[in-house]
Each structure stands twice: as structure tokens, then as C-alpha cells.
Amino acid sequence: MKNIFLPAASILLFCLSDSSAIDVSNPPQEQASAPKSDAAAPAEHKAASSESKLSPADALERLKTGNKRFVTGKLEHPGQTPRRRSDIATAQHPFAVVLTCSDSRTPPELIFDQGLGDLFVIRVAGNILTDEVIGSMEYAVEHLGASLIVVLGHERCGAVKAARETLAAKGKAPGHIQSLVKALTPAVEATASADAETTAKTNERLAVQELRSSTPILSEFIEGLQIAVLGAHYDLDTGAVEFLKEAKP
Ligand SMILES: [Zn+2]
Image 1 (cartoon, rainbow, N blue to C red):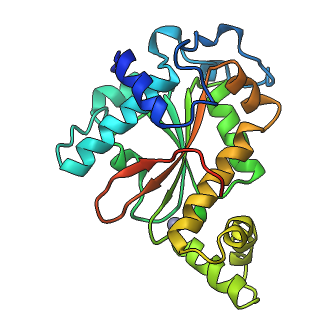
Image 2 (cartoon, rainbow, N blue to C red; image 1 turned 45 degrees about the vertical axis):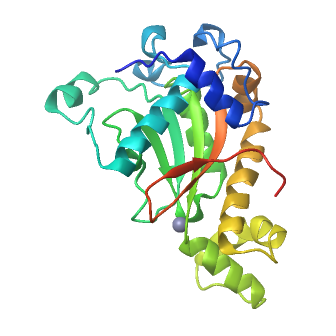
């Protein structure tokens, strides 16, 4: 795994993001004292070794650098060789968790130009939060050593569009799609007079807020400066990922 040591740049980047989630002047230490809540987890999936663990700031920098390669077409396709596959066959240490939409145009490994074992990816239409989604994140943070959680929504999201139209018509979506509408309702109601992109970004921010207060695991890791949680929005036209600043919905 490549390690990126750009402390000054990382601090600057985090100044552009939310500074309440992590004190970048005091980089997180290794996870030796991290709270453990699931003693039954497989031994090979315990937290990543300290030498391979990135700080939240370095993890964000790695995503931004990879996305820049994607946008400019200068892809490196890292970690996709048979050697890499073999190296991580018995243990994984993804540096970041990405929750994103199931949309076929938003695969995180491609958008961030990452390889096998780099990202712990959770995908569901509308990048909504459920207990299962949060449980997956907790596992990645507590047992696999991921140091960054990104909630990545995107431009022209069909789930957001469907939720806006369904609620505007005071109707109900067919089948289980209604469950997506229900999950997106807070963001839609908060942005009734705005456009769909504002709704999508609000959905991303609301998810970040919920994750930061999620007890007992995620909030403890955040308070311990071991992880950061950020919202992000993907531009289908340019391929660029915008990491969101904190703002009221
Ligand atoms: Zn979508």
C-alpha cells in the first residue's frame, strides 16, 4: 500500500472541509486503544497494522489524488495485479469506507482510481442509511481499520428524482421503491423549493450528521480522532468529486 505523507497539504485540505470532526493539527494515533465491541469477529479481520494505516487526512488526500487522475484520464489502476490479489487474499485493510448510490455510473474504485482491498464499498440506491449500512461501516472501522467514511451522492440521481416526484404528488412509489422514498423524505422536505442537486447534497449532509452522532462505535472513533466522516457529491459530466463543506440543509 502506498503511504502519502503530505501533512501540510492535508491540513489545508481539511481546513476546506469540516474541521469539527477532526483536529488535523493532532493526527490520530494508531488504533491500539480503539473501543472493541465484537469479540467474535474473525481474527484475520482485526484492525489494520499501524504501518499500513493512513490518517483520516491522508486517506482523504489519497481519494482526492485518485479522483484527479480519473478526471484527467491519467489513470494508474493501482492494486489490480495478480500479486495484489494474492497479497490481500487472507486479510484486508481498506483505508476508506465509501457509501454511494447503486447507479451504474458511480463505482468508487473507478472514480477514485483505487484497487483491490483499498475501499470498503457500500452501495444502495440514493446512498441512504440503514442499520445494515451503519453496521457495515462499524465493521470496516472497528475491525478493518478504515480511517475515513465518505457518503458519496451524485448528480441527477434517479432515487432522489423519484423521491421528489413521489412526495410532490403526495403519492406512493411502487413496491419496495417506497422504502427509498421514505429514507429520502427528510432531504426532500428540507429542500422543497430547491433543485434536485440541492436535495442530493442535503441527503449527503444529513447522513454525515447522523453518522457522527451514531453510538456507540462511530461517535467514539470520531471523538478519538481516529476517523473522519465527510459528505461528497459526484459530477457525472466531469467525473469530479466535490467534498462538501458543512452547512445547514
Ligand atoms: Zn443515484
